[in-house]
Length: 127
Image 1 (cartoon, helix red, strand yellow):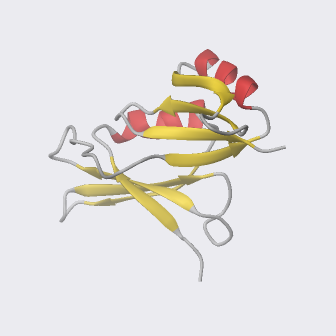
Image 2 (tube, one colour):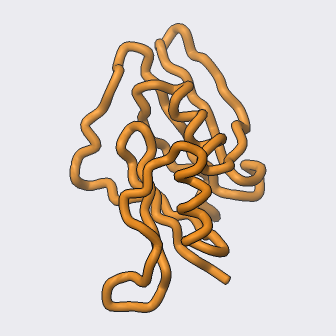
Image 3 (tube, rainbow, N blue to C red):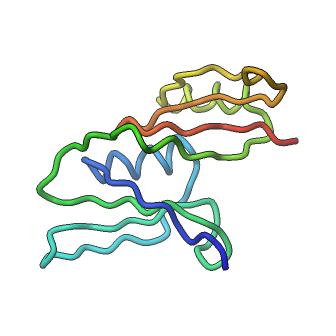
């Protein structure tokens, strides 16, 4: 068994795809419209779905925004250098909500960025 994907609902699909591809460097793997259900699914990731876990961006055509609730935490991405990743994300127009640095009560270097719908993405420095 393995994790296939994590689904998040987004209010503006094109904006979300642009963030994940242009700011975080993922690729759009596939996008399918379901007119009868009035929704679109887009899958983004760093590698092919048959080898890596990906994100499923779900856009319900009649819902412009969502309440994120308090149960969801964040998406985590490994990066070789969290400081450089934050600088590049800012250069690409992304929002860094916690600058790179050691986590509280530990030494692992982390940072947090936020996507256009308010989801948090943790960058974890792995050498």
